Structure formats: C-alpha cells, structure tokens
Image 1 (cartoon, helix red, strand yellow):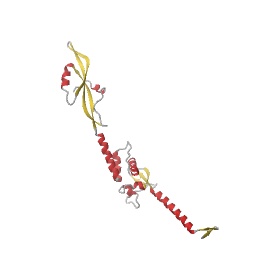
Image 2: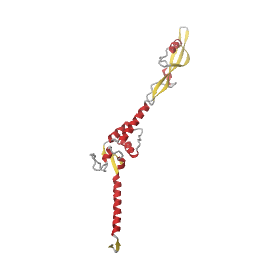
Image 3: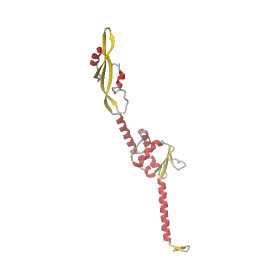
Length: 224
C-alpha cells in the first residue's frame, strides 16, 4: 500500500490502469498505421493496408510490407510515390475495396487493363479482359435492314431495268411522274422506281447506306 498526498493507493490498481492506458495507445497506434497514403501521378489516395493487401502477389501488397523489397520514395506527407495515371488508378483501387469493376463511360477498358497488369492484380486482369471481349463482341454483332433506293427512268427503260435487277435488289413501288420531255411529236413518260435490298449493318457501326425512304430521294437520277 502506498501513500501519496495523504491518500493511500494500491500499487496493483495503478498497474492495471497503466496497462489499460498502454493497450489503448497500442490500439490507436495500430489503427493509425492501418491507413496508407498513395501519391499516384500527383493525386493522393487514402486507403487501408487491408484493401491494398487483397492480392498477395500484387505490387501494392509488396509496397506496404515492413521492409519492402520495392525501392519506392515518399513525398513530404509520407505518401508512397507511384508514377502512374491517377485517372485509371481509381477503378483499380475501388476493385480492391469491393471486388467489383466499375468503369466510367469516359474511361477505356484498355487503360484499366494496363494498370491492372502494372500492379499485377490477377483477378482484375481477367475481369477486364472478359469485359473487353464482351464489348467487342457486342460491337461486331450484325442485323439485317432494308436499304431503299429511288431510280428515275423513262418508259422505254422501265422494262429492261426491272428485268435486269440483280444482287438482291427487288422492286417495291413505281411512281409515274408524268411527261418530262418531248421527243418529236410524242410525249415520253418518266417514272420513279423504288427498289430495296436487305443488307447487314453493324450495331453502333458506320452506316453508309440510306435506309430512310425520305432520304433515298436524294439518289434520284442514279442508275443501277
């Protein structure tokens, strides 16, 4: 039993208090050490060691180990310096946080793949490659559509033109636009002949054919 300022104190109680205080300080120190700053291309990211350690084979896991084998400098704030594009690092870090690949519309999958390969995050590499394959397959899908053309011809040319149509073109409609010129003493009728053809078209791809019946009038006077 110790006496201080006229008050008796139990040494064992003091030891328990000091031990509890020490444990609290240790917990605070561990919590503080759990957070990590990364300076990626001039942009600072704040995350945890747990997040960066999701893939034990990754560059980021090796970076945060005690006595790391990577020779990486730190900035004035203690953040690890990484000379990479911060725009594409965001999706990589979010993947480590929640295991999902989320890419903004203004970012290319190839850019994410480049970063995933640099940081050597195996599952993310596979996920991005699958996303690229899915995207490319969707873009290369084709569907069939009808392309229309309007041909102007005289009465004498009409029979021959319709009988000689080939390459999948078929007759759709004939419009008599009346007499357009006079040859000798006879009037000669002119016709607009609407023909169509079924053509493949790439989804989201270039469309060089006019499929709108209104636009096809721009081809007036063309010949097959």
